[in-house]
Length: 456
Image (cartoon, rainbow, N blue to C red):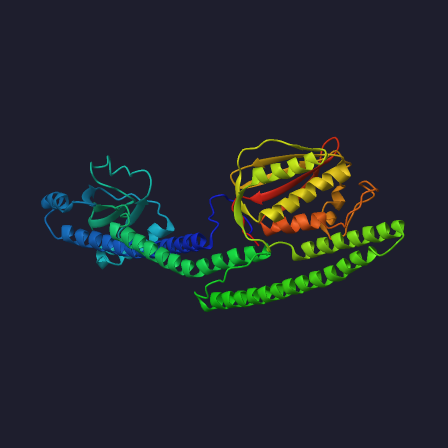
């Protein structure tokens, strides 16, 4: 899977589905809440404005109908909460109004009796600094925008109505709780669906990885949605067909090996009746090369998987192999390493390491062998003092029957199947082989084997 540029993004399908679903719920709830909040605010704005204008007009009508000496007391009595009423005496001064204020003034003028509607009416709205008539903010009163409406009562008397618009109320706790419940419910549903989809897909991926290494892929449970079940069924059918093909190939190779060895053995016996010693030795040498080539071809074709797995000490196996070659006079050195428990097919690992050491001796004059490890894998490293391998040929040398005589010793023999077999064994244990030229002279080969390999 392509990695995301951010490190916090989850990598598994289940986690991604839950995160995306939760994000979608949060965004949708926020959008719906914002829409309702905006709509409600507009409705509230219109309702409050209409109420303000109606109350200002009705209060002005009320004050005009009572004796002049009682009007101030009545205005103070009616002032409470966000409302403030006070009387202004004298000739009204003209006021500049915005278009919105002028529309409200026209609206409130329509609510007045005809004789007073002809007198000046003013509306002023303040959203920042307080108007001079308001003075200091009263303690404990939460204030938003302020609206002032000036209406005529009688000649040279006006009513100044001041309305302290309350601030929008925060979202109630019930809305937040409902949003959290919706988020948890949808996340749980997404996790359930993701589990039904992701679990068989994970098993399918694991089985496909085993098959890619050449191993026996485990059957994938055919469960979950229809699409996933069909994919699992198709994969199981494919792996069954591959198993049948491989089994048929193994039987064929066994039969070919038996049929080839029989005539070769018969020819070996026949050479004993050749009287000319020089001719007999030449024939026997050719037959021996043919026998070795047959064994190498069959081993490379079979690859891995013919031996039972068991737990060994990898360090002891490599050390014993190096000791055997050293006792035969081969230029092999080995760095002592502690115990390295490892589950593998030991004869295959021995054959792979032996091929690497013999290649190093044949083409690089000597073999320096060591074992290194980390929490995930073991590495068997073989270094020589040869000319190395050009970078463009480091992939090609693993192909069957490829020998780089131009870059290695021209006098060496071999079938060109050694590295092919090493690669097959490494991949059969879930590992790999890497080639690297040393800085000054020589080649370094790394046989990497995971501590818990998926065996083919």
